[in-house]
Amino acid sequence: MAELKPQGAVSKMLNAAWVRPFLFLVFIVVAWDLAIRVFKIPAYQIPSPLDVVAVLRTDWPELLRQSWPTTYATVCGFALSALFGIPVAMLIAGSKTVESYVYPLLVFSQSVPKIAIAPLFVVWFGFGIIPKVISAFLLGFFPVVVSAVQGFKSVDPDMVDLARAMQGNRFQVFCAVNLPHALPAIFSGLKVSVTLAVVGAVVGEFVGSNSGIGYVMQRSIGTFDLPTMFAALVILALLGVILFWIVDRIEKLVIPWHVSQREDVIFAS
Image (cartoon, rainbow, N blue to C red; front, side):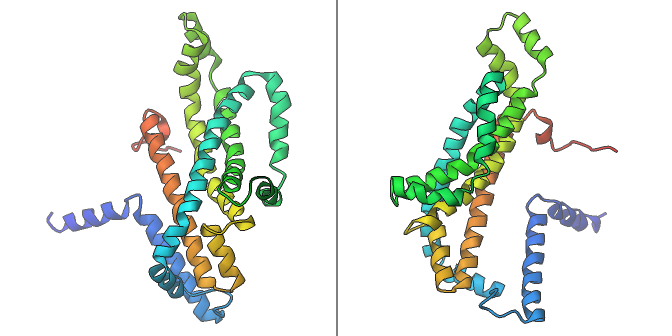
């Protein structure tokens, strides 16, 4: 029995939520290094993982300093996406007239490449933080609206009728039935939105900026400094993962009752 305890501890550690992604990441880095060595890929095309790690170690203070403008633009754009996206979704889901006018235009707007209109934001608002926030907002807005509309439309009409039969007014019915039922879909949209907001902020920095991770990437591409560019990509990936994790933690606190948050769910075929 004493010999089984270490195996149980190892098995528990391997089943931890963070261990398997970390092991897969290690596998990707090893495969990356082996591919460079086997196919003899030159450093000016793809840098080795050790070169990227060296840049992260030596330039970490500078990369961290440059990540703050990107983080600020991302968070502001994401907050605006949630602030405007959820009310718009409520209007679309609650009115066929609003849906017929607004929803097709929202879908049409997604066919316009944001990087094509980002220079206009620089012309209109200058080289400050506002163009980056708008770019992050535009990329994060649509997923919030689509997911929230789906959530509000999937509310069981019988539950709404029951709440109204219990003398609940429209606001009470919305808070007791519509909103809780739509929250899982809303948070799904927010998770997509926060990662796309990172992309939007970087797009804004590509177009016109003298700070931020996008600026670092643009500068490194111009000088063919690929290790620095890959290090900046690592910073962006970390930023996206951290923001996604924060939204996921908030979801667990807000809707702990939902089936997606239960750890003991058993899937049967």
